[in-house]
Amino acid sequence: MIFVNSPESVCDFCEIFAADVAEASEEDKFIAVDTEFIRENLSIPLMCLVQVATARTVFVIDPLAVDLAFLKPVLEDEKLPKVFHAGQQDVEILGIHNLAVKNICDTQLYEMLLSTHDRISYQDIVKKYLDKNINKSYSTSNWMNRPLNKKQLLYSAEDVLYLRSVHKKQQELLRRCGRCHWLDGEIASFYKKDKTPKTKESNLFQQLFGWRAAKAAEIGMDAQSIAHDTLLNKICKKGTPLIRTVQNSRWIINDTRREFLQFAEQLTKNMKISKDIRPKNISVYLLKAILEIKSAESSVAASIIATTGELEKLCNGYSDVKCLRGWRNEIFGQYAQSFLRGELTIAMKNSNVILK
Image (cartoon, rainbow, N blue to C red; front, side, top):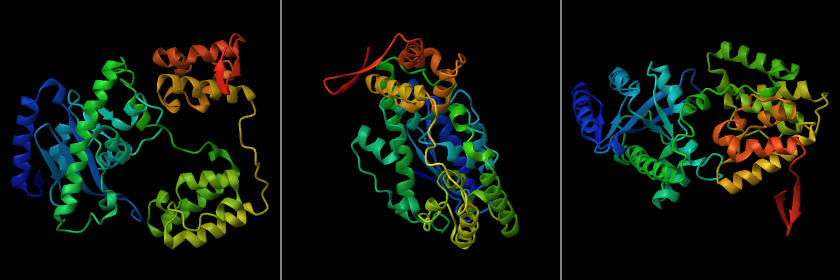
């Protein structure tokens, strides 16, 4: 491991990194990337470490000690794959430092092509492929403190070291089952998905959103740190009963918890919240059942095959839907269309749900 925390060590990085990539075999010509950052109670997330692993070297880079500009040509090299695990936030934080990441791979997303896991954790994926138990106690350590201790540095280095090994094993399995290129060109779109809740147009959401924006401006803090969109969305769906269960929610910071909850409860106490928030079209439920059956048969996570929104579009007669193209159509789309044409039925046989 090389700790990059001085101009001299930056020069070492550039020299060693270039040699590592140039001399790597084709199957090893990629890098693993991870970050450690703090965003709670901060208007702008604070980058505390960047870890990069080649086939021969692990670099742990201290952004509090060196300018990260030297990573720009590395991360923006379109020919060099960068492997993350659930890397959306890592890529977001790097972007804040003007570091655009090109040619992204994501072991969490690839796992969705190899199993029915929707969002497998890093600990679980390392256990599955490497039979190692990771001690995640340092994931919540204070990464702002300097100097970092040896255990923190070792923990951060192991993250990318294991990530390389997991990626190589996944790629081998994807090759064996002919799924290597199923996500080509798609990972960036997963990272850019609009996370705005579907209830954003509701009057309640607008009022909660407005309160949060005003409070964020007043105290100079990131709005998402005050009350996350996830919480606003849940309040819109479940109202006062939900509010009373989130006194210790991780989506609300301590300084504004009471004020926000009081405001939200006042808004919702006289509001009738529908208990049935399910889609009205029964066909959507039946398509979900077919999706679960085909997901289990193919060992591909249902959520990467088709979303609920896409199922609703199918029921409404749309044909320009992603699940009707390519491998998704082979696994599920053709069966969905057959069902909607009345050519396929769902039945029970020996206590199992089957398609006829």
